[in-house]
Image 1 (cartoon, rainbow, N blue to C red):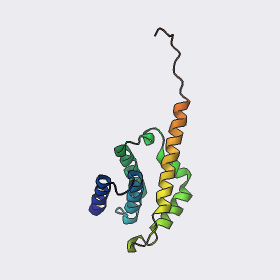
Image 2 (image 1 turned 135 degrees about the vertical axis):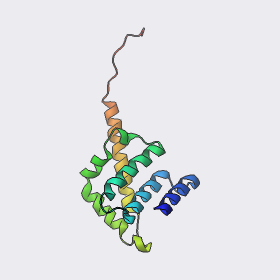
Image 3 (image 1 turned 45 degrees about the vertical axis):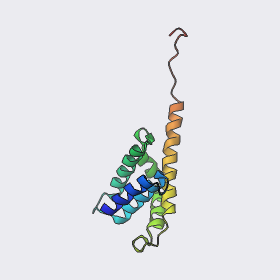
Image 4 (image 1 turned 90 degrees about the vertical axis):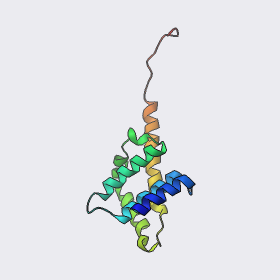
Length: 128
């Protein structure tokens, strides 16, 4: 876990890849390390939300990323299985899971934008 955190920090400071890609890869690595006996999925989603906030992406504050993942849990497990196969040997393909995570964030942002569009401002007189 310490190495994962170090690599995360280096990735951000040295801009190896876009921070959202690094975040999704971090999340996959966390799930593959599986540091807890139970609750790794819930913790990984909390870490994902925290990292989104740290990177300045706040849609998850208003739109339930957990709900979006739950609604597509078959795809979640499918991409997790695809990307974790061979992880311990360094022969895995992280892209199915990274793409799924980015799709989830895109969906949350779209829902957030749609909810903002549904808000209406109170009508005020031009003198106000």
